Structure formats: C-alpha cells, structure tokens
Length: 385
Ligand SMILES: Cc1cc2nc3c(=O)[nH]c(=O)nc-3n(C[C@H](O)[C@H](O)[C@H](O)COP(=O)(O)OP(=O)(O)OC[C@H]3O[C@@H](n4cnc5c(N)ncnc54)[C@H](O)[C@@H]3O)c2cc1C
Image (tube, rainbow, N blue to C red; front, side, top):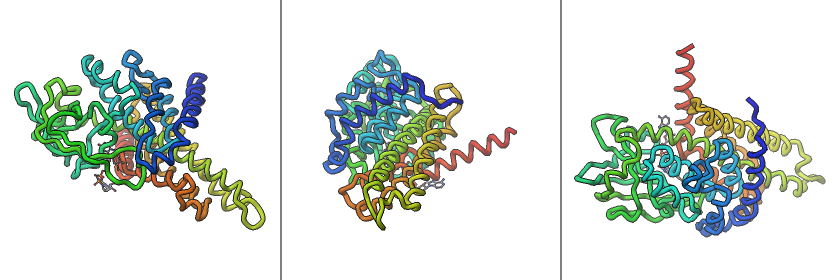
C-alpha cells in the first residue's frame, strides 16, 4: 500500500492547517482558561467541511474519504485539544450514526443543522455505572407507550450535549435479549424530563463540555428510533470502530503539537555552553518522538484506508487508537521534560497539551479494552490459519 497522500488530500491538509493555525491554535490557551469554545472559528468550519466531514454534500457535508477525515482531525488536535475533541465527537459520534442509519426524514431533520457550524452533536453511551462494559451495565431503558418511547435512566461523561440539537442515545429496549436488546434513539435536549447537568470539572479539555444527563420518563416519538430496534449494541460497536480512527488522528495532532514545541524550546534553551538540542539525551527524546508520531500516523491512515476499501478495519482502528494515544502520552511527557521547570508551568503550551491528551487512553475505549479487542482479533485469526 502506498501512503502518499493524493494531490487533493495534500491541498485539503494545507487548507485545514492554515485555518487551524489562524483561527484555532492561537486561542487554545484561552479556550482552556475560560472553558469556552471559540464559536467564531466553529461557525467558519463549514467552509472547509469540518462540521460534516463524512456527511453527504446534499446535507451540507463534505462527503470526504476517511483518510481526508483523519487529516482534518489531526490538524484540529494539533491546534487545540478541546476543539479537536468536540469537533471529532460531533463528526464521528453524532453525524456518523445519523448518516449511517438515519431515515431520509431523520437525515433531513438533523444533518443540515449539524453541518451548519452553529451546533455540535453528541452521542450518549456511558452511564455512571457502565463505561467499558456497556452490554452488561447500561441501565437506561426505553419502553413503548402508545405513539412514544419513554426513556428513564442517566448517562455520564457525555461530550457536547449543551451544544447539540440531538443526542444519539443508547437505551435498553428489551431486557431479555442480551446484546440484541439495545436500541439507539434520537433525543432532542429540550424534551420534557431530560436534564443536561452542568459540565464536569476536568483535568483538561476544558473547552469541551462533558456532562451528565438524567432522563425522567422522557417521551420521544416512535420514529425517533435510529436504525432497527434491537441493533443498538451492534451500531455502538461500529460507531466506536469509526470513532477510534478519529481519536487516533486527534492523538497524532496532539503529539505533533507537543513535539514542535519541544523542538522550538530545545533550540532556544542553553545549558553547558550550547543549546540543549545539541545534547545527545535531548536528541534521543526528539528522535523517539518523531519516529513514534510517524508510526502512529501510519496506523491511523492504514485503518482509514481499510475502511475506505470496505474491508474489516476494527482491529486496525483499535491498534491506531491504542498506539496513537500512548504515543501522545510519551511525546507530551518528553516535551515537558525537555522544557524543564518551564514545562510544568502554565506559561508554555506543553502543560495544557499534556493535560488534554491524558483522556485519550480512556475515552472511546480504554487502552485495556483496545488490547482486549486486538487480542480477540489476533486469536481468531490464529484459529483460522
Ligand atoms: C472527557 C470525556 C469525554 C467523554 N465523552 C463521551 C461521550 O461523548 N459519550 C460517551 O458515551 N462517553 C464518553 N466518555 C466516557 C468514556 O468513554 C468512558 O469513561 C470510558 O469508556 C471508560 O469507562 P469508565 O470510565 O466507566 O471506566 P471503567 O469501565 O469503569 O474502567 C475502569 C478501569 O477498569 C479497566 N477495565 C474495565 N474492564 C476491563 C477488562 N475487561 N479488562 C481489563 N481492564 C478493564 C479499564 O480499562 C479502566 O482502567 C467520555 C469521558 C471523558 C472523561
């Protein structure tokens, strides 16, 4: 396989990079400090298709391939972790399932709004008692009552609900049938009985709101069902496979940002009569960081390429997410080390980037769960030899 980007992808990469460098990256510190997203930038994102990366053009999206999507997400992550996470979740976790399984009416109702740059979408899987083990732990239930579904329960750690016109919500619609007893419902935040709680106070990603939701007998119409009844768990797994390519790309961007800061600082800072970039110990950290970023990006592109070929990509998406999130952690750690005390200070961006990347080995499946997914694939492959 040839990983050289085609001319169109290279042009898109340059355009997204320039936009991020001008509109997002200079404000990343302020977004972190104030906890407020920079909506001036998000409102301009439709010009480049960033709010509808893989949504068909008829609904206001860019209809891009998965490698171009990864390119865009890497640039967003490079510019600002908070903006990157919220926009990636919007694309992969909300626009993605509606594009994949929505009826023509559902797509027409939600996608033009979602791609408009005025909102960011949301997906609610996790609950206070269920994250890694959704199948065993999800309690939020939906029962049919006349012409409605009635939803009860709560969701936790949900990205973007305060910005979203619709929350794709995983519910249990049949307790008796195991993983075939789940369904996805499209819930509008204004629905009576739905409380969107105040944003959590987090270690990082402060501009990306993470909120708890309570559903107290929330009624939505029967046609709020997304896809087939009973397929919610399978839809969740497919959505997470896609989402992991996005988180992988986001991590490559975060790692690249920290790496660039480390190189810049290593050139300026002097110790023992020369720039620290001339000390071999620093060069080794930079060499390892550069190599690992390349390796992580290639895994992300490989997963994206497999997806675009219509080939199975779940194992590669888990590998890309696992590798890239661990690379982001390692590169950010080295970047702080290279900055010495200044790396531990809020004055330099590496401190924020370190806090932002820390989520990435946890969200959309922890590293332990990625290893479990990869191991299942490789053992199955070994059995079929
Ligand atoms: C900033 C942020 C944004 C988020 N956004 C969203 C969102 O938009 N939508 C959404 O639905 N969720 C979201 N989440 C939730 C996130 O996806 C979950 O927190 C994550 O999946 C882990 O679940 P948990 O926290 O319940 O951990 P747990 O499942 O309780 O796991 C705790 C620990 O046990 C380990 N563990 C669990 N099972 C196993 C096993 N079988 N083998 C080995 N180790 C195991 C885990 O790896 C972890 O180390 C977000 C979380 C954060 C912090």
